[in-house]
Image 1 (tube, helix red, strand yellow):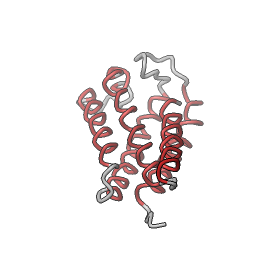
Image 2 (cartoon, helix red, strand yellow):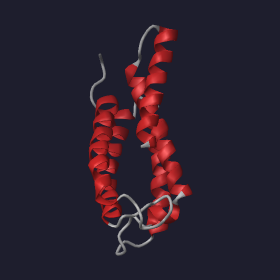
Image 3 (cartoon, rainbow, N blue to C red):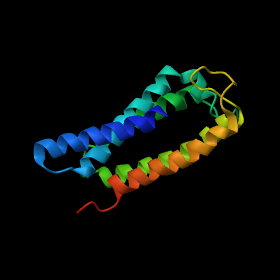
Image 4 (spheres, rainbow, N blue to C red):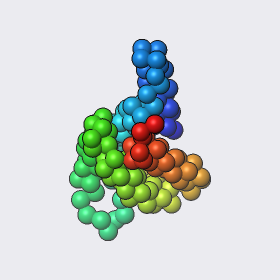
Length: 153
């Protein structure tokens, strides 16, 4: 998955550059910058694949397109806010709640075999969840480790 790869690549590059220039890995900065870049990247999907992402929301929920746009903007704001250390713990908690709240949309989309990029029902189906659910838990753990917990080490 592209966001996962981006997260790891930005983390490794940032930590390495930090080590080269400051002789410190600066893992908190690297972890939060990587997460912020990933969130801004995933936000693009909300604007590029609006139709398909709207289909991830159950029929009984109104204003699907607006929700997709709102959550895209929210991901950008949260990603950028991670760069503000004073607000990082509360932003991290908000991101964790956000990640928990969007998981049902991913489950719904998998049940419907939705391919959100094409806006069609020829996606991977339920087997996608074998990857997505552990990935979502990994993202939540990442946020907890780098943004929420006490990083005074």
